[in-house]
View (cartoon, rainbow over the protein chains, first blue to last red):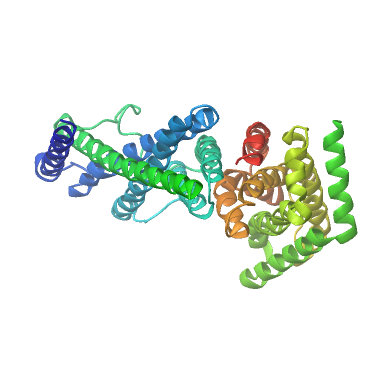
Length: 233
Length: 222
């Protein structure tokens, strides 16, 4: 039953990805001002949303790990696996954002990169989570999970400060397309394509997240068994 | 002042006074950075004022890493760090003592470095010079506070000296930006550094509080 549900989810995700691609490339009309170039929004914005949501999941996992680590060892391991999986998959999606952004910027602004609030925040966020993954690689033993959780919390605290500091510094990124000021918003004919892609990328993100979480749990169980065997030997 | 904090602080200051290890390496390293930058960029006139704030902040940042690495490494000898772990005093006091001690070292280095800096970059300060006495300590506190915390975190890892820089620098970015902007606006006299000073103050308060709260978690992690 469980296997069937997973298989169904995978099939739905693949179908959504194909449908989302069709909508993005053929379904949505060409933008009046930007031409074909605007279609990158169907990849850039969903990837950013997935990345930021997953960094949120990672933060929640880190906090939960610190809360559970004394009294509920099992829950703590589960939280840690979520924190790691979400950070890793988040970094991948964040990388996609940082690659698609400059591609668009080169054509629309004439420059690859600018030190603007949102660009810098995303880059710093990426740097922080890469350093988080490096810490997990360099530290060993059970302390590593505690260290990683603490660093996760520090990193999350840093993000709003980076954002504010760069807003004061300079801002060039286009004003939010959704929920922005007057004159913002998409043409209604483009909205379905956007929502389909949003859904498809979130489904895809959760699929990868789930697989990574499963792998990490298996790692934890193997490590646990090895430790038990070493004790009994 | 709490007794444990005082004991740790006096001990650290005395060790440093007798060996001058961290101090000398920091001073020479930051001097090197200042010289190297002035050779690389050939600063003169307005241009030197524009980059001076950045050079000073980055020189401080790189130099203080050498002191931060030694801050906990010297406690490993004779298992002092294990004794500190077992001591029935709050870890926050130990943490704060280390931060204050290293803050003093870095500040003294900056004070000694300042004249060289003014000479090499031919600076004369256009804005309110006394504000530098607010900006630099706030920036240094941000650096040293987080640095001591992450040094305690990386002390029991492989490649600990490298790892400290890898995790400290990304977190330090907003404070570095504020420090550079404020220093530059004081040196050039353009713009108002107050906003950046407020940002630095906020950064210091947020991260010092978090470090004090989480230090025991990191220090006693097993």
